[in-house]
Length: 472
View 1 (cartoon, rainbow, N blue to C red):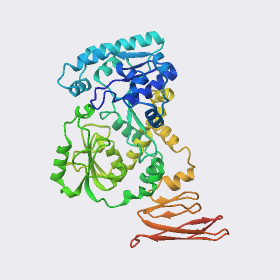
View 2 (cartoon, rainbow, N blue to C red):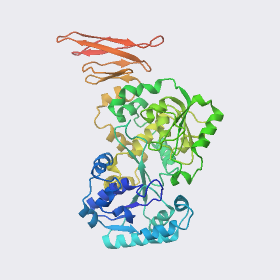
View 3 (tube, rainbow, N blue to C red):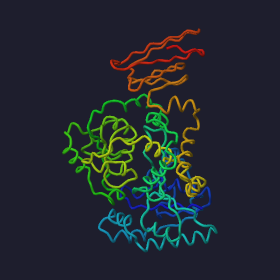
View 4 (cartoon, rainbow, N blue to C red):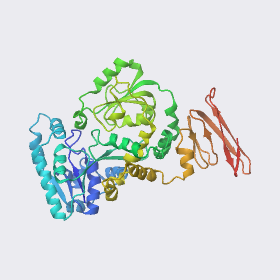
């Protein structure tokens, strides 16, 4: 039995974790398991609709997070272990600000909360007649860790990962057995995999992008080869997030100040945090991928965008503490680390990034808690994500950073998309294609023309496979 736990005092909203709540509730209802959460999260669907959590909301996020729209009868019948609103309010009143109360809980034990959760655990095992195999949560306040450790119950800390729409096809998640909002277990797991199996199969950077990006952006994958326009890209943060403030109080303005000490103002590109426009944001890129491609260095605070920077061969500078801290430069001034190694990128993607349905799948959770080798974890992810590809496809189109196309695929060019159903093209790395015109006959002979932006120092190799014959 896995027990979900939802508790946060983040100040962006009283329902800051309503998405994971309904994801977990879906699992709890399906298996007849209990769920621990704020009292207000169990409000009726009619009441929640007043906050915009209505039919359209469930249709949108239910698809992205892979949970079903609950029925009111199911919510009423769920085994609810409620953290009383009065209990929460009394605690918060002890502090000048709610964010202060939250940071306290993230960094210190509060015995009344630990006692309440311990009593919940005792009652759950008594009522359900089975042990708690693990706690699922999106935040790990110290009182939860104390209560779980006292009973030897593992915690699986979960969070949305770096791959998310609109650039990527699907939102993928991350599970950490220590704490997602910390250095977690990533570093030790990565080096353990290198020790166990240094030659696990890997994809190229472009192969990873091609596998996970939404098809409409395929034409832009080549942008990772382009010379950056800016010296530094700055990822702004929401400055009132407790899970960030517990490690660093650096502000957006101080990051920008530090950046201007290193580079000229016109060498810095500033990207707002999605949903939080600022007065200093200057980037208008359609996605964080496009923003990052414009920059040689990328800096941020506890940001998933720093992993994306590593993926596309940019140099990452981080503040605070995160899973990727050991691969990041320590702030803007530190230049000691260069481009992250490809084996690290593959490790994160295949051993850590998790499909939405896996984060509440009991079999996958039991697999993670069964002490598997890092090789087993990696290969489970690798085999899952590449399951629709033949071995030849993997070798030809995903294990190289060169631009490749196959029979039946759409060709993607710098200036747009040109559809072509029957050509195999192999472009040497970095070659830019401006436009393509294709004429295909009904007989055995076909021809096409390709216009190049520039090829002064580049070689072009074109292989066309027609009726079993190859012409160069």
